[in-house]
Length: 71
Image (cartoon, rainbow, N blue to C red; front, side, top):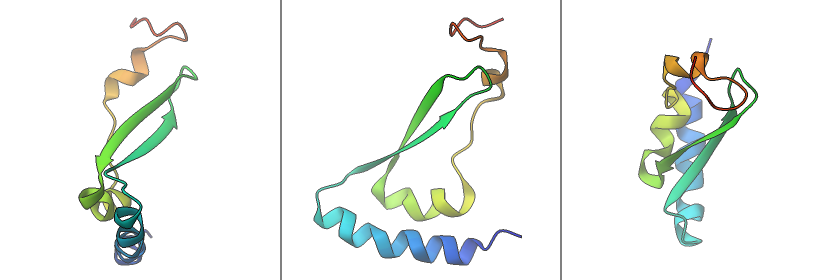
């Protein structure tokens, strides 16, 4: 089971240090089914929510080929 409270607490603890370093956005990366690296950016203030609940990805990624063409 996912411990969302712990994930939120950890991300919240990191935001102060990141803010002090001038970070405004956090890049979240993943590799889709075609092996293509994708990225989503989250505003620093939303990091605790993203850590606990994720950011979601469109089901349309399932239809992209390795050449990034949609089938």
